[in-house]
Image (cartoon, rainbow over all chains, first blue to last red; front, side, top):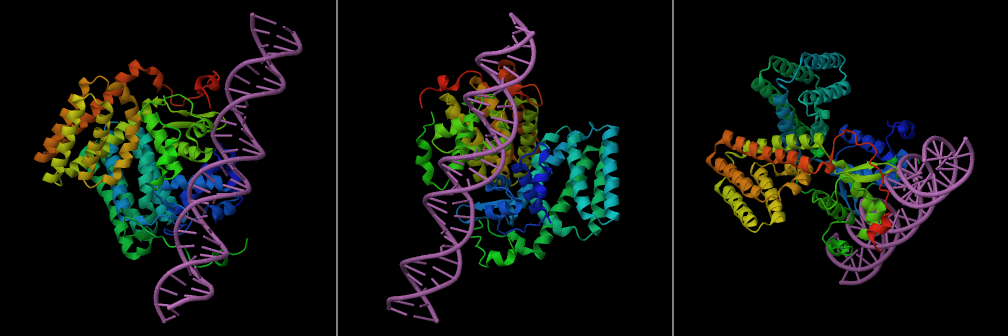
Length: 252
Length: 252
DNA sequence: GCTGACGTACTTGTATGGTAGCCGACCGAC
DNA sequence: GTCGGTCGGCTACCATACAAGTACGTCAGC
């Protein structure tokens, strides 16, 4: 449970309320703590987090720009359902950028870079042994980010990260089958090995198939959790929740 | 000149004030009407556009996310100077995405797609004859967008567009040398021809060199207009304008 | 003349009030 | 029973007020 008081406690470190709220909400959405389709009200969030509506509202606008929430004026704001189109688009963006970066990284990567990547791989194996899914997710993110940094295009990572968010929401449901983790780690290792060898084409191919495996997972998830997805391109009428909120939310 | 009254006049079409302000400001920044380094005050803009601070502020937050303005809390908001790092990053993103899309477009493109692209080329030549730079910019944008649409990844265009904005600011100063326009159009035509022929690798190479030509232009601009660029990675102390604002802005 | 403290005017950040608009339940007419 | 109008409550949108903080001009002291 995200505490209501904890928000302002961590405020000292330069970041303002808006950025904190933004991070909290983003984390909740990508972590599926807030389910696709559920309503997120400015008022409720402001009350829960103990801040005014302004920073909450501004955060929601940013999240809307990222495609993580849909704002319907005068109707409500809803965590966006996972859309076929968005997932495909995110996959295309991710593959194009990560592979392009990797191709440039081959040749640039020094022994130090390779060593640092391998440290991450070891940590991932440790997370696997402990079935620490959350830890693995973070390490996976860091691995791919580091891979782009090696190419010298670290500043392009936020774009990948934003696209990745669309995919990650679905993957949260996928990975509980922990058998996958070792497979993914193996693919990571293969990419690093080929990068170290300087084999450009095979490294590219390895990373590409790795990313596509992740992509195909999303489709499997769709079969199991159709309620998180949206068939329509234009998700009209998100339908206001008919049940009384106060009943389901408890005291205040 | 963007009129103060015109903002709310066009409001009927579904878009709210925030979106209108966002479009106006973005257009002014990319069009260099607002110069890199200049201050953009929430209050001044709100007064000029005849709206309150709220939608202006929200627009600035979005523009900050796009890297077009830098917000310094309690100090001011400034149109971001063109940063070496951002330009390189934008070029990388653009090249990776557009070329990846083109490679997928080869084979998918039907005669109708090619014909539509050639219509745009003809329009570009017309703009060239009339030295209509603004028109050419729009047609160029449309051409590249259409090219991605052919690949089926139209939804990835906004990402390219956002990256492109960083480059376009500099290009506005470049293109006045109209000799360039016919050269660029020729490259466009070459890409379309190779796409129609289905020559994947050469089409890719043609588009890539086209994009790099654009990129190299930016470097030339830097020599001529260094004041628009920022050498430092962290542009500290943008320095508040010492001159009295009321004098330079006229009546109210 | 030079230096340093102070005050003012500006900035963005946050909180709150009022408005237009939409949904959905209720209720009367048929 | 079914349909149509109405009304209450909710929403996001916009406007405004207050707070926290920074830069810069001014002026006292040296």
